[in-house]
Image (cartoon, one colour):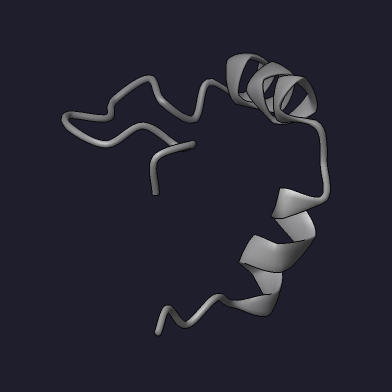
Length: 40
């Protein structure tokens, strides 16, 4: 059985496009070498 964190549950309630916008604005994937922010 998967153990889902409270943070993951809260993020899951937000629209995916809202998350993508924040990722673009904050450039959180700029130096990622494998997993992007959404995949983690």
